[in-house]
Length: 172
Image (cartoon, rainbow, N blue to C red; front, side):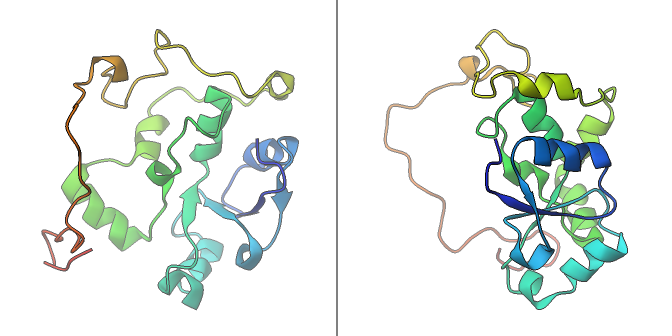
């Protein structure tokens, strides 16, 4: 699943997540050379050092919550998990986002019972896709993607000027 991909793990991340990365042929490296950066705690000193780096300030690196790996393991696929839902921003950004949208996906997943990662399940084929009847193939709202309205007309991207932040009025 992660063959030849390099990742850095904050020391806030569990050993099970690092082991899963390695089991799926991922490579461990320093954060400056990693394809993926994982942390469980935006206030952890090693994660703060990434947030305070020039690379982060210039949008060269992104930190992800390690529950992304749990979601990949549950779905047995990296392609069926939107990594963008697992972006772990600095705490002030988290607070601003919570005021607008509520909880982050990893906070929602924390409410679910924690299922220990089973190494024996890692040996099964990982390219299997979920069926449409599978309850895991639903959005976080519980609405099946099969029931969403489709549009036959051309759709266009949003305005290229971006979205305006309701708090600071800046365009993002």
